[in-house]
Length: 459
Ligand code: CO
Image 1 (cartoon, rainbow, N blue to C red):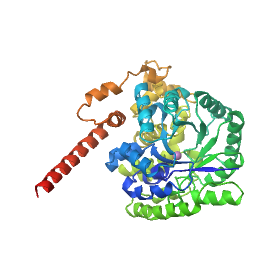
Image 2 (image 1 turned 90 degrees about the vertical axis):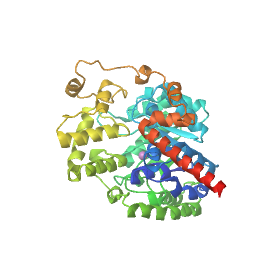
Image 3 (image 1 turned 180 degrees about the horizontal axis):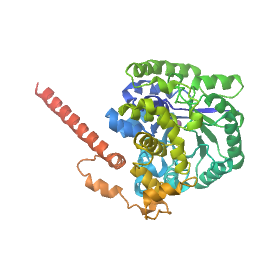
Image 4 (image 1 turned 135 degrees about the horizontal axis):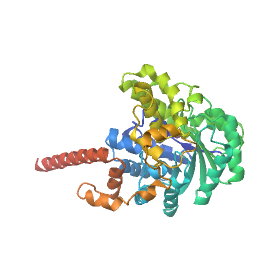
């Protein structure tokens, strides 16, 4: 039996260990080698990479994608998309979702892994539809979590709906690394039996379960595992590519990876990792095995965000209290899986509850959630809290995007002279202030370059 691998170093490992601060200059040199490794796909875009490029790295995320595409002509490039939220934290109108998917595929993406934080299928249908229309592979991702309202039967139903929509593969997205080997075995078996599509497992090493979970998933017939080159593996990141390839190969599975190439890839990333340790971007805490997460269900990215949030407020000593408050907020909100944007919403609210008193401040995102703007909560929300926050306001029951006016053409007109492409318009729609700053900085840089060229000519 064959087991394939998706390498995550450029996206999730980068996001989980170093808050997505890896600039393209630090990895572009190895892409040609990675292209020879035999990966099923390389996850390289989407998630937080888009925001981070614009906000912290002074990079055009679309240009990054084109450069990766050019350097890796033989490998399927994969991105993570938050359904109707795209790469941001709110719902966008359908025209924007369709345009974003279209431009992503046009710039080089082959596989779009699409999920909704609440597993509300109405929130992924447009993105899935457009992905298929553009000739890319739509992979439906089930946001995995454990709670009194999440059952094996529910997850299988979600998988069946995704297949009906036209998804070619089903990914189990265990963003918190809380899926145990038995749960993996049962869920992979159930999905293989009842849905009949290739199954991909995405997990994190946060709680130390990942290698065992992957092994049992393989025994149940999983087709693809998400892993990270060993230098960027472990902790809140994925399990190591080379380790799993080695173990599974020994057990007799067919592993289509070139181990010599894997070594080159890892040798390249070792000093990159060391540099981020040295400059303090990588906090050692994210590398530890944290079994508390089995109770708190806090995903890796969320844990590192909570730490930096508390550090900024000089309150890191209250981390344990925040971690205790997190599941309570989650229960109040009807057990949403803790994945973007729910993880941020629950994390910020839990932090505020600890620092300012329970629900003294309620974020506008939590208000919108209680109004129904993010979709249907998996379980029952705390009615008292809902009443306190909404007052007499009626919650909505339709798909929230149906209430949104088309936005793309209108924004494009507004940005005439500023945006140079449809991609720029999309960057602006996703992150307006950040994109504006980025455009201004880019213009300044270009003007400087022009000046320099002119001076050179006059020499
Ligand atoms: Co992840």
